[in-house]
Image (cartoon, rainbow, N blue to C red; front, top):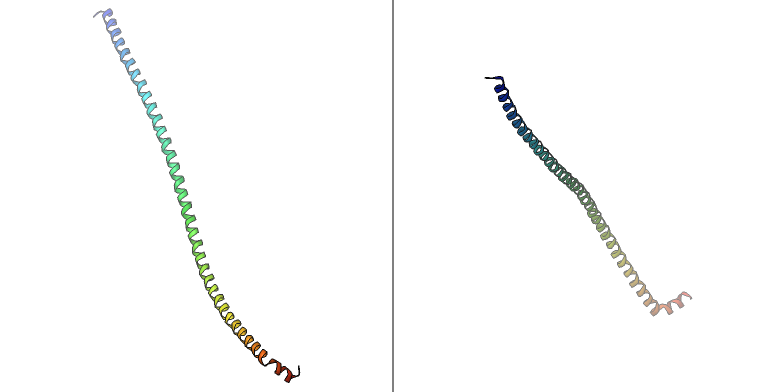
Length: 132
């Protein structure tokens, strides 16, 4: 084999290798673009999930706060219920006292009325006896 033939074969091989290298570079560029696109898509998806997670965490915190407020309101209502019970008992005692006082006043009014009637009927002669 002559040197010219060997140079020609090597030139053809180099040309084939350059073509294969070019195809590999194109493939590598395509893979890089696909990787970048996939990475960007992953980041967008990750960001969406981060936002959703933050919203869910906010909702959970709101629910915890609402639960605590509801528990506090329930405790307040129970205290009010107790106070209402105590107030009702006190009002019952006041009502009993007023009923007794009303009975006493009614008795006094009846006695005064009876005394007045007796005074009207027998007052004149009795006052004369007493010297008035």
